[in-house]
Image (tube, rainbow, N blue to C red; front, side, top):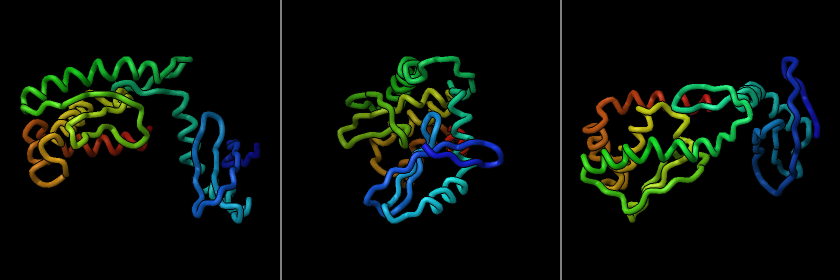
Length: 187
């Protein structure tokens, strides 16, 4: 494994050469994995790592902590994924029951999984999947996401009618979305 320094901080990295067009960077527990074409020189990859060094270091730091319902805790060997598997349904399901009844929109199925990019999704068969990582978020933002996904049972898009329905139950949804986007950068 190679290493490079940024402002005195060591960043270990591993390069994987693949038949791809772009350069990709993934922050792992103690190093960075870079995927690049066979034709990309090591000097370019190192410049790419340095260009993203602040983001990489922040990710390394955040791995020492975990978030639970919007609060940051020091990770002292806790299996965070197991914690999220336990806590997410405990907070999400009561919101689903409450708002499904209020909105008269009932999912055919509710399930959970770990996703990298989506907080939730609603299928055309009205099955809703929530991300276990929702447990990272403050409860009021989780509430918004539940209403958002339930609204997709009626409106399978993000048109005006959809947002109108969301706003009927979460009048400050725009503020919650702004806070969510800001928090996503911390995770």
